[in-house]
Length: 125
Image (cartoon, rainbow, N blue to C red; front, side, top):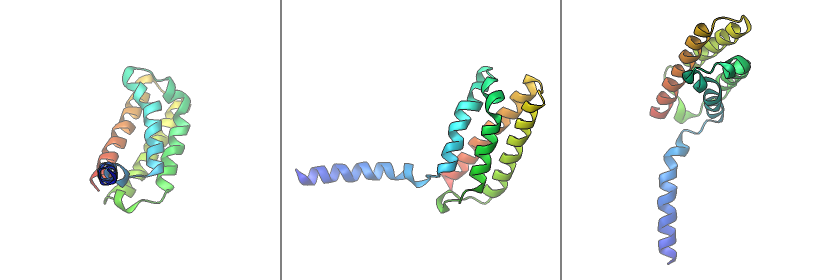
């Protein structure tokens, strides 16, 4: 019986290992912001962008400033993080300048797509 429990535990640990391979707290925090701030834009809801663009920028800056885990690094990562922060600054400024909803939507979708490209590249790293 102990062998069966040990075997089941070993299988569970091996299945969970790939998910832990790319753990990066700041990236996950930014991902949460993407869900809360940018995903509603896809449904036409710009309120979260207008209310939380500064938080999105802060999250991007924290991600950029954080230490890169070796298993998350890919050749263009640092450049991509610089670009992400720039695009988040552009969005935050556009919100403060009360730009049109179409402009805000375009900027928000660009950041959303950039994040997902980066997340995919991290998974492949």
